[in-house]
Length: 123
Image (cartoon, rainbow, N blue to C red; front, side, top):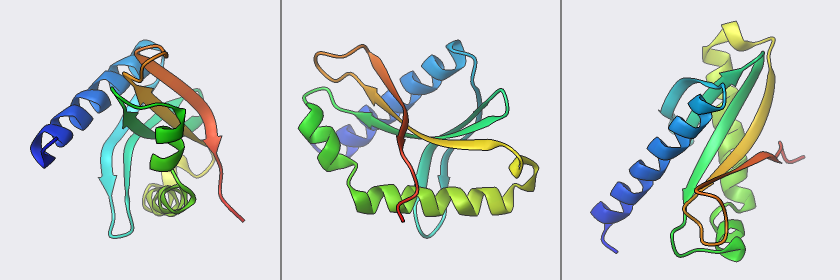
């Protein structure tokens, strides 16, 4: 798969995940929020809860692929980026936070498989 088609698949997966979150009562706060340290695919809010979502579009993947794609280093980058988001957006300083993974188009799972509280800050 070329870089362009990989990006297109990823973008389509993120769009599908956003629509799913909105349908389930989440408000999308930001998409593809970037810093020099990393990127968060989707930042969403629901009932005083801030969700930092990592989207994985895996049309030919499985659970092993998912765990490889979301290794400890990637999780740490997401947590650090989320901290920077919260520092820059103080209005969210009193909300609970959660790190979710939204798996899109993985065989054997629903179109959007939402893993709530998929990981937390590593100590």
